[in-house]
Every structure is written in structure tokens, then in C-alpha cells.
Image 1 (spheres, rainbow, N blue to C red):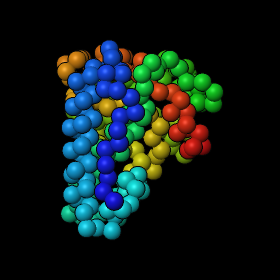
Image 2: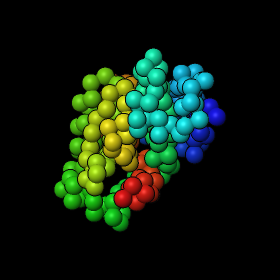
Image 3: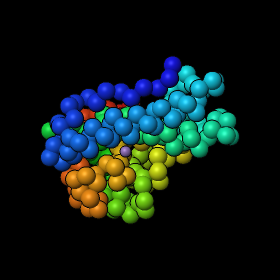
Image 4: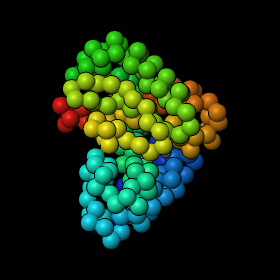
Amino acid sequence: MAYTVPPLPYPYEALEPHIDQLTMEIHHDKHHQAYVDKVNAALDGTPLADTPIEDVLRDLSQVPDDKRTAVKNNGGGHYNHTMFWENMRAGGGGQPGGELASAIDSAFGSFSDFQAKVKETGVNQFGSGWSWLVLDGSSLVIVGSANQDNPISDGKTPLLGVDVWEHAYYLKYQNRRPDYIDAWWNVVNWDKVAERFAAAG
Ligand code: MN3
């Protein structure tokens, strides 16, 4: 079964005014679709074509040499964006509760220190990439990644990722990546992040 772009779990305009409708349309329908088409083309006819994408990315050494870069980039793009859509919602934002909140406080000092570190990592990511909250063993850490690399390929479990590619914000924020990240906190679906945290623990 080839991979497919999952439908957005909310309307394109649902994240306004923080993420504009046109950005969501292009990002979901064009960018994500292109990653899916390209990873499908790369894996077509290989034994990995029926493997869940997270299992492929967890061990890229299983991918034939001549396809590995295409799969890392486009399979990563598929996985990262699937997570990204799920980790946002209309009327999101605020702060997490429960065990995730306590874990963030003990790892980073406070929720605002956590936010500052995610932002710093995203702002300082040179070129295209992501800023991630991940579980590394039992520790919460923040890491950046270039392009569509995903921490899952380094043995970590991603819980939350901010897409800092220009295509994620340029129409509305132009060069102002810091402003985009500030606004992005208003659409985070903390229930979903808590679910990932609970499943990984
Ligand atoms: Mn993107």
C-alpha cells in the first residue's frame, strides 16, 4: 500500500489568524503531497513499500543505498507533516496539563523556559528544518533537525515539532520566523502531545 496524505483534521481556515488558510492549503495539498509522491516512487517495488513510514525512518540502513536520501527526505517529509497536522487544532494553545506539564517543568524549569528553548532552536536552525520536543530515553529534550530529518532516525521519540521551513510561514510572516513561532503556540494541540507522551512512556 502506497502512502497517502491524511486529510487535515480541521478546515484549512481553522488555524486563522495564526496560520493563514492559503498557507495551509499549499502546505498540506502541495508540499505534503509531493513528499508522499516521491517517497512512494522511491520505495515502489522494494520490500519496504508496505512498511509503516516510522519503521522505515527508525532504521534508514534498511533502505537500499540508491534510495536512502530520497526516502530520508520525502519519507521524513511525510512522517513529519502527518504529525504536524495532528499536533495543531482550532482553539489550541494554552499549556499542557498532568504528567506532561510536570515533566516539562522538571526538564526545562518552566513552561516559558521550554517555549523559549523551542523558539531559540527553531530560529537558529539555519535554512530549512524543525524544532522538536522529543523523548530521549526517559528524558525530555529539545533538538533541531535539518531538512526533513526526524529524531526517530536517531533513536528518539518525537512528541511535538515546529516546522520552520519558509513554506510554513512565508506568505503571512515573510522573513519573521520568530513571529511565526510565537503565533504557532496558539494552535498547539496539547491533548495530542500528551497522548504521544503517555504512549511513549
Ligand atoms: Mn512543511
